[in-house]
Length: 140
Picture 1: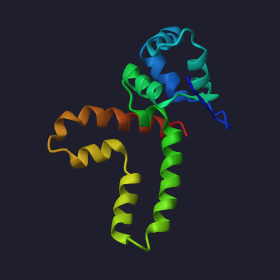
Picture 2 (picture 1 turned 180 degrees about the vertical axis):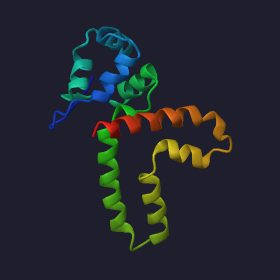
Picture 3 (picture 1 turned 135 degrees about the horizontal axis):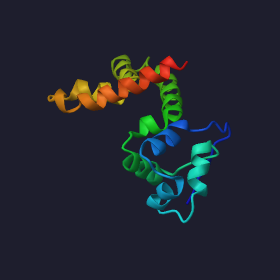
């Protein structure tokens, strides 16, 4: 298992909350990931390491949370990085750059709603997402 070290060591409270909300002990979640012990999962939650892509997707499936919800700081960093790169190519292709910037800065749930012909099936997910965001904002 290859892990990427996180130099900032910011705890990933979303991973911890998702595991706790699902009523899983760290050992159980680690076993579901295929780990022999819970050390790696503890490092993910403490922000000392990041899971590889396969383990990140497995955690998303196990907890029923999107990757964006499990790794919000990562998503924010990627959005910022990509936005600055897109502005650099804006002069060559302004229309596609504007479209790309909109897509980068649009929440995945919002994008799903915009593209969906059947919005009713996505409303519970969007409601949950908005509720999570409201709670996070209330705690700021």
